[in-house]
Length: 173
Image: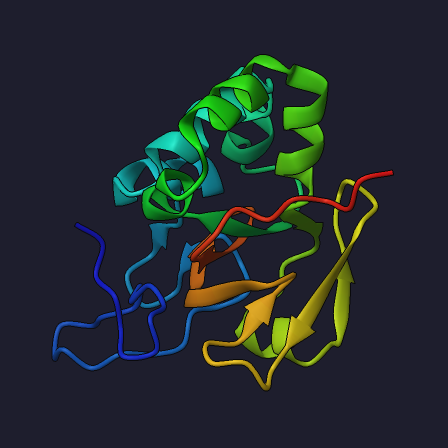
């Protein structure tokens, strides 16, 4: 299991005395010289993103999230509970419709490596689907495009993952 710190972020830098330090901007943990996992590897290791990973594979986006040299990206990742709230027939149809699935998944990804402070510091972000993701800091929990952000700052070699409590869909044309 991945260690989670008080704010819901991944605890990456624990030195021998048990104290923590802030993660660096590179792809290694300077305290222990441990390479950070890619976004895809981090999601796999967490064990709570199986439906998301299935969708990513169906859309042919796996290499994008596994490649340490791709990006960087910020992913707003719906966990398995978020996908469970979607009607199963609708979810099956979505996974079968690769172009639409790709757009929906790209709606969850922003180009750039943005920690929680940076995400919340902007009123909106533009996704890889070229759609707008609005941030609502007055909501509890804070939301991105209406989905609650329930864990933040899971740092990967190629970006950040922030866990959301629902699947977000781009606006229909």
